[in-house]
Amino acid sequence: IHSLSVSKLEITPLALLIIDPQGKINKLVKLEPDGLAEQLDQALDHLPFCLDRTNTTHLNLGEFLIPGFVDTHNHAPQYAQRGLGQGMHILDWLSKITFPNEAKFSDPAYARKIYTACVEGFLRQGITTASYFGSVHAEATKILADICLQKRQRAYVGKCNMTRNSPDFYVEKSAGDSLRETRECISHVRAIDPAGRLVKYVITPRFAISCDEETLKGLGDIRSENEDLAVQTHFNEAKQEMEETQRLFPQFGGSEADLYQEFGLLGKRTILAHCCYMDEHELEIIEKLGCGVAHCPIANMTVGGGFMAAPVRELLDKKIKVGLGTDSGGGFSSSMLDAMRQAMIASNAREVMSGGKDKGLSIAEVFYLATLGGAAVCCLEDKIGSFEAGKDFDGLIIGTKGADQGIMTMVEEDDTLETVFEKFIMTGDDRNIVEVYVKGQRACVSTS
Ligand code: GUN
Ligand code: FE
Image (cartoon, rainbow, N blue to C red; front, side):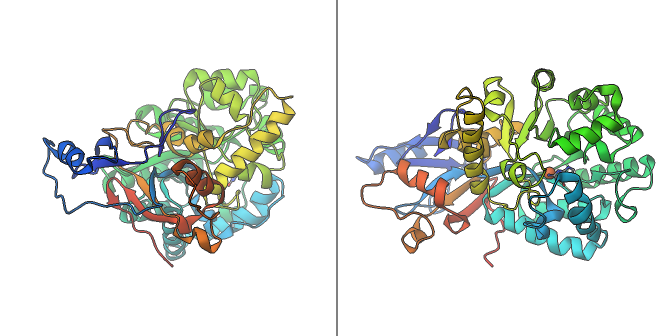
């Protein structure tokens, strides 16, 4: 089961997926129930590589395959603070809960412990690709990149840049230090994964409030020297944040799009988290520059203070790239299934707010956002997000075994693959994620 486009979900009840030894999808063969053996022989003939026929995984009855989830926005150092401070306004939540917590990542041993749990935990949730904000610390961020590579999670990893409006115990001393440490982290990530097969660096100004102009300008320079580098930041998230940004940067008249564009940080590799408040001007700029939006519906409704979710229908209508982010810990859950459900709920509220104009999202649409849409936001749509031939095989085997024990809605005789899929998306959890594959190999998923 995979998305072909935002509105097109393809469900193939009987299929053979051939993966080459490098982990790439060779082809997806649709099968008919009659004459299976001949169809398999035919499909496996004349492959451009040697296939070990004993190395075949048969799905059991009630199991199906979906692409791995892409979490376009989350914070690895917030893994152990999820659930704290819900309902607070964003700047209060940052100063009271988040900054004291993230400061603990100055200790590399602590960072290793939490980041190991975080990456394993995300993989267990079926998140095969994640775009991570690290803490402000270079050492801890390098450890995070190492762990993603070791555990086989595809990831963007970025050290937060924070040179002002942050407490003494959690701030960089100068723009110079911030930029130097950023370059150090870029070099580290390039050293451990030179071709960027799984792990890449992402330039990560936390948000404009925490960066002085010299830092933003320096990051823009790094981006222009390294066109392959992605950028991520928080964007038009909440009124409290937007008002403070306007106070600090009055020259941009309240436009964060103008602000980040001025510093050379917007482009097709830029991931903008939240985008809750978007006027025509902001939409026009991000559309023109091809930026992607990380829609974080759980965080939007629990931390931020605006309690307003992004106008996803409008973004999709304008052909702006949109994916889903757990934003854990601003969002309390690291489950992309939860993010999908909350995206549906938030979109229904927006349908009412818009007088029926912006229709709520369907299951097929939120599934697209969690897979192929997220891949596009991360500029990886040629590589992952669906089972198209030529892409890497990042996939999840979904099982419904626990369904009769009250985990997921029970599966009945007259269910079709389509209704089982619906039941999983709306009521399943990580217990239904049986296997997690990244680039054709099993990822290291802890079962604890
Ligand atoms: N804005 C700046 N930092 C953060 C963060 O950690 N979480 C969220 N949700 N918004 C932010
Ligand atoms: Fe965030």
